[in-house]
Image (cartoon, rainbow, N blue to C red; front, side, top):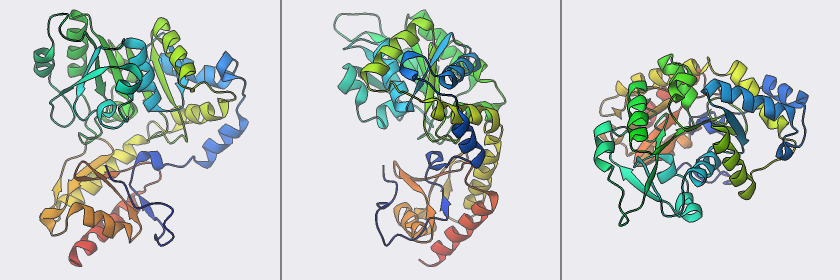
Length: 355
C-alpha cells in the first residue's frame, strides 16, 4: 500500500483536498468544546464517567451486554482474537480483510493464530465458500475457532455486507460451534447506507466494534462490545497491550459528540462519493467501481495515465489520494465538501489532458 510522499518533504505543495482517508478528519469546533468540558477520572480503574457513558451507549447501540473503550480499531481486532482464540487456532476471513492485510501480522505474532484467507468478491465471501472451508475437528489440523467479517469491506470498495448474509454466516458458525467477530470500522456507514440499525446489523455476532476516528470524525478511539465475560477478557488484553488509559474522558467526549452529531451526516459523504464516481466514469477509459458508501476505487491507465502517476500528479496540485492494492482510493468524509468533489474532477480531467 502506498499513500503519499513523506509529509516532511518541504517541497510538497499544500493539501487543499484530502481524500486520502476518513482518518484525516479533524475535530470540529463543537467537538473540541465537548472535549474541553468532559468530566474525567482514571479510566483504568473504571473511574472516568465520560468513558463509562460512552461504553454504555455503544453496548446499547450494538445490543450487547458490555463494551470497552480502546485507543484504536486495530487494538479492538487484536484484543478480540486474543480473547476468543488460543495459540494454534485458526481464524477465517476474506483474504483482503483488515486483520489479514493491514495489521502487521499481529494475530500471528501475538496470538500464534493461523488465518485462513477465503476467496471473495468485493471483500465478501459467500456462505458456500465458508461452508466449503469448514472441516470436521481433527488433531491433524488447527481448531477453527473464529469467523471474522469487515463491515464495510474496505479493500473490496467500501461494500456493505448484506444483513441476510451476516445472519446466515452467524447461524452457520453457531451450528459448528465457531465464534463470530465483526470488524465494524465503518459499521455506521453501512447502517446509514442501508437504513438498518447497528443493533440489527450486529445481531447474532459475538463481538463487534465501531471506530470513531474515521467517518465519525473523532481524533482517537474505538469501542468493542460483546458479552460481559468476553469484555472482561478483552480488558485483560487491553491492560497487557498497554491500552489502559487515565483521564480518557477527553477522548470519549469526542466519541459521544460524534454519536450525537456525525452519524446521520455520513449520508453526505456517500452522496459525495457517488458524485465523484459518476464524474470519473464519464472520463473515457477510466475504470470505476460503483461506491456503496464513502470509498471510491478507480483505475486510470485506460485513460492515458497510470494510476500511480495520476496520484502523483494530483498530489502536486493539492489533492491527496491513496494507492491501495493497485487501484486509486478516494475517501470522502466530513472535511470534504461537494465543491471539493467538483474541483477534484476538474483537476483529474486537466491532469489527463496534460499527458
